[in-house]
Length: 189
Image (cartoon, rainbow, N blue to C red; front, side):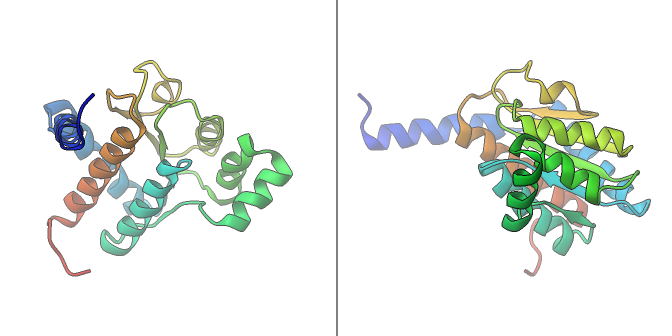
């Protein structure tokens, strides 16, 4: 059995390998930034959605894209909205209903799911398609053949089955996109 220091050393080393850039990821992140800026230029907004840790990533990125990158962006992590829509339409449909109520043709979506199997996120993508969104970007992990990864226009996938690794890589990727749009790593808060 590994001692605590060995565990953490191995853990951080493994994580660093996952965030080490390769050309495909860098190209995809540039495309994400371009999609978000294009959506904004055409008067659209970007919706970011996920569950649990992915919802936390969605909240963080929504704030950064809105406040720092000056792009219209929103998520649906308001407790009364979630419980109302889940109660009235079922948990698997609450994000779909939120997209139906708030989305407009020309908007974009970032759909985040570590497993790529979250039914409410999959249904949200279907609603975005019905609403004629400009683009759907997915961020997933686990199986390379997960359902969500098959549904996006641009699909970023991390080859890991560890939730914390997947969620944290998604956050690193998306915060890097924010900084790319801003054009700086450091700026006043």
